[in-house]
Image 1 (tube, rainbow, N blue to C red):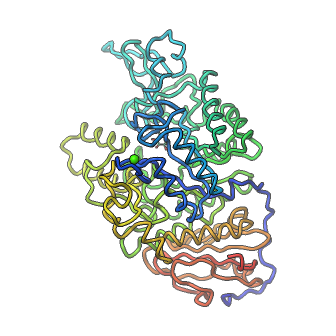
Image 2 (tube, rainbow, N blue to C red):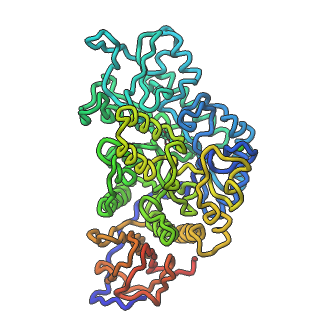
Image 3 (cartoon, rainbow, N blue to C red):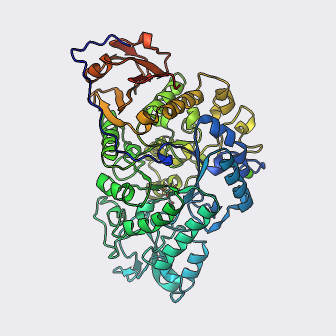
Length: 601
Ligand code: GLC
Ligand code: CA
């Protein structure tokens, strides 16, 4: 124990622990992006048999829930987030029998399976939409959102309002034969379902029940807070005077009937004690979030908020440049952490997924000398907060963003390509603007996270025997799973150790309270997790340089009366090298556990 001085031995009193215990709070989720995980049959696309072959790897890491990004039939306009049949598997990924086999293999290992439920919209190839589009009198017409045009001075039809699509352009598409527009908040091939229609809700409930009965243990619910729209479909406020299309989120994020709809879903989930996590972009009101996840609400288990992962989005568009700021990150994290703990809600912990760039490149450093240490630092920062932890494939290896030499030809993501096409069409000769966009794509394009998983140093990184659908990162000969599993000092093993720590002390690290220390410190993110049984102090240096550090005054009293130990470090720090004042290494992270025996590790 460091020789901290204190003139009191009383310490800080432990907060009352009121969080209810459940299996999914103690779980760690591993997200598999099927197209890029493991190709078992040599067509360059990952598949379900590939996932089965890697379940032991996921289990050894220490995760116990596998979340599969969409695997259902889809024309893949948006990588499966455009479903054309909720009851069958996209053929290149396999068959329903393969999914049965995967479900059984997951359960045999004592793990759980979470499917991605995409029901704000379907694909335009879904039978429901094909019917709906076929005529205004078709019974499925009202399963989607159709509106009459407005007419401009030239007499031409105009969209019914000024809402913009998240993937660029108007959120309305004109259907010439029927003379009406349909709403699509994402691509025009992703028409929004009309949740006002009880048949739509019943059809979604059927899908949910079907997969739960077949053995799924829960769902990640895509863009679920967008399902209830303001039925007057008002124009959005003009925030971008240069565009005819405006952000209408206010009129459909957490809309008027959202909670009624979520309770409808929640009833079914409850019967199966199922897991649920709702993706909820563009919500900043924590009380509103709590209405979806509060323990007494019977809606969802938890939600993904977007505050931390939009810190580097500039005004109006994610591809506008902006530097993220550590103070902002601190205030977001501590606001969510303390609010959920105090109000019997529950947090999700994530930095990466299939929509986000790689965390090392974004919040750490992907320079060779810092990549591994910053990946470990970020694992420590994230993984010991309060909430259910989500790891995205490759994050456990510290995989970075796409190589710097990628040109636009390498990208496949619809969001990136639509943005590029819009920019180059409206400003074709503006080379500096085009260059600036390419720079932003390397920082924030969704393809950064979608390059194939790097299993070993064989051609195509052991992902596939042929050239994959998206190029493998150049660094795979060095950075791959086999190398890291064989190296006790690797990023992979650091994650293993961190997850082991989390599991050994659930009272503190799952259910304990959170307190941010040194909120004003410009370089370090320091926090504590406290339970009646003990406390963990988590210290992380977010800078690529040495930073001097003194034991926080607030901790002195607590520490002085208890013994403790360094239980995790990415820089070889031990209890002996910890004193009142030390110099933290670039991207150093360590965890000091006190007030409890450390023999559980
Ligand atoms: C969600 C998905 C994203 C998809 C979008 C539209 O945000 O995570 O990948 O593009 O919904 O379905
Ligand atoms: Ca395949």
